[in-house]
Structures are given as structure tokens and as C-alpha cells.
Image 1: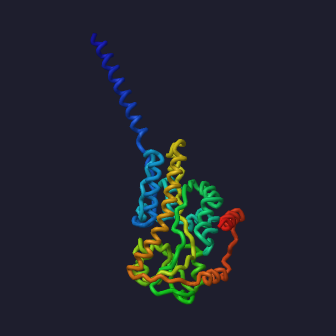
Image 2 (image 1 turned 135 degrees about the vertical axis):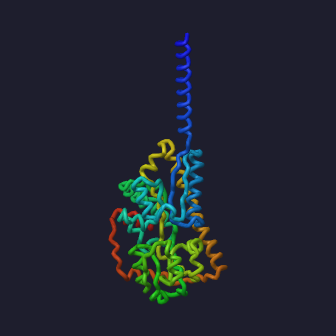
Image 3 (image 1 turned 120 degrees about the horizontal axis):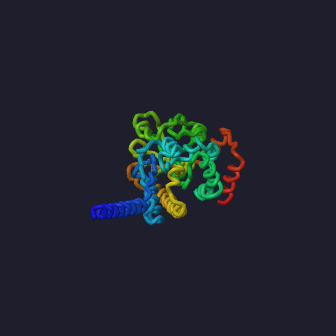
Length: 331
């Protein structure tokens, strides 16, 4: 009798354990997949807003099964740092400018040229088409899945003193990215380019280490540069993309049946950021004018001619050059 009762208790305990284990498994299965996306740009920038839009679109497309947490303001490191973290599978998604990615994919230097694109349509056609495919192919060799191309678009010049003509660039110390093509452009204008981390630019302008900087107009507002630079000149000297590079480990977190939906959400988020950039630049222009910033036009053809006169080496991989030429011929 006692033995029979003991056996019954064992069976009940076993059944309870099995049921508990089964419920635990179900609970694990419904937990959303969380991905970290790192950015160096300020949280109040259109880029961070675009990343949050991407997060919402991914959540919507996957019915809440994939969540993207955005870490802006360089909280997880600089652009190159986060790309290397993603390469080492220690970060899910890194956001980095194309000039940074050139350190790992040398062929991408083709995008670093000053005055490469005549308009936004050409720039989009390139990365949304053949050139984008080449970048994705090469990134995979480094364990990175390029899932989208956000952008900061055409860059202009912010300066303490007005710059109206190419002669006004003479002797001006300007911060640029560590990019030989961008630096060559400003040298050709007569300026003195200095590579400097983005988080040191405000202090550099404030202390007089540099006289000018360059970026999208909206960045002048978001980063507070207008407090120390009261002039913006439309130089449109470079077009910059922000690649979203996903680690192999992060990509493999996504079940195969969700990958297409995840990418659909990313694509919508990227499109939203591009629209946000245009609006941010337009809104920033009006706000900056109210804050006492003066906008200047200059002869871009003269700047372009000076750059071309520098005879910067433009020998690129033929396959990549063909992709660029194709995009330029479309618009």
C-alpha cells in the first residue's frame, strides 16, 4: 500500500516536472529577439530618429518578434569601434559612415571622392543597385551583413568667418573625417584640413583649434555648432552614407522565416530616415537663421575644378567603376 502511494507520488511529481518544463520552453519561444544598434550621432539627430523608425517598422513587420534597441550618442563606442565589435560578434548592428567602412573594404574608396554625384537620385541609385550589391558581397567576407544604407547626404561647410568664394578658404583650418579625398578637396580650395574625432569638434571650434567643420546642415543644429560657427556655405563637396552593418551572430539570431520580414522593416526604416534627413535639413536651415546663422552660396563649379586640378588618383576596380557609371547614367 505504502509502495503504491509512493509510486503515485513519483508519477505526479514527474508529470508536474514535465508540464513545468514544457511551459518553460513555450515561454522561451515567445520571447522577442532583441538586437542592439549602435550609433555615434546625437540622440536628437534625424539619424537616431531614423533608427527608431527602423525599430518600429521591424517590430511591426515581425509582429513584435524582433525588437531593435537603439543606442545613440556613441554610448557603445565610436564608428570604427562598433564595426569591429560587430565583426567580432560582440554587437548586433553597427552604424558607420562609408569612409569608415573603407578601412575594411578598400574598394569603397570610390565613394569618398569629392563631387562624385550630381544629385540625390544618382546617390540612391548606386547603393540601392549594383554598387550596393558589391558592398554587401565584400562585407560578408568580414562577417558583416549590410542590411541598409542610411545617409547624411551632401555635406556643407560651417565656419567662424564668412566663406563666399574659393579665396575665402585660404588659411582656414577645417575639421574633416580621416579621408584623403575629402582632405584633398579642401587643400585644393586653399584650406588646411585636419582629421579630428566628431566628439571633439565643438571644443575645437570653441577653443580655436579649428576654424571650420563640415557636415549636413542638420548636424550643425543637432551638435550645437551654431553656437560657435555663425556661417554655413553650400559647398556640397561630398555625399556620405551611413551603412548598417550587422554581425553574423546577430543575423543568425533571426529565424529564416522572419528574415524577409525583418529586411522589409529595415528597408522602410531606411526610407524613413532619408525623408527625415531632407526635412531635418530644411527645418534646421530656418531654425539656424533664427539663431543668427548666415547662409552663403559659392561657385561650386570653381571648387570642383580646383579639386580636379589636384590630379587625385582615381584608379578604381573596374567592376566598381562600372557600377558608379551606371548610377550616374540613370539620372
